Length: 145
Image (cartoon, rainbow, N blue to C red; front, side, top):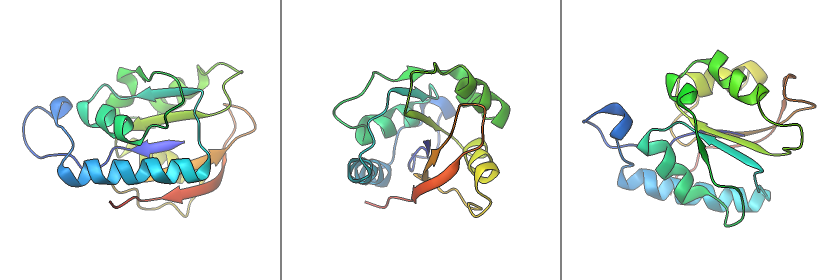
C-alpha cells in the first residue's frame, strides 16, 4: 500500500512541517477507509518527516506494528522505495509505505498507468505475487475529511 501524506502546513523546515487541520481530518477519513478495506499491516515504513508520522498516527488501524522510520522514503526516489520494498521479509503479507510525491505518484503510476495524479492523502492498495513483481491495483482513494 502506498500512502502519500495528507495536507501539511506551509512554511518552516520541510521535515518538521505538521499536518494542517484539513490533513488531520483527511488522515482520519483515510483510517475509516482502511478499516472498511480490512487493512491490517504487518509492516509500516514511514518517511521520518513529521507530516508522514502524523498521517499514519491518525490513519493507522488499532492493531498493527509500530511504524519504522526510513530516511530513504524522505529522499523521495522510486529506486529508494523499491529498495525498502525489496528488504521486506517474505512473511510480511501487508506492507504500508507512507511518503511524499513525486516518488509515491511515480511508483503508483509504474504499477497502474491510470494513476496519473497522486494528490495529498492518495492511497493505493496493490496485490503483488512477491516483493520484486509489479502489482495489480485493487483499491484507491483520495480521502477528504
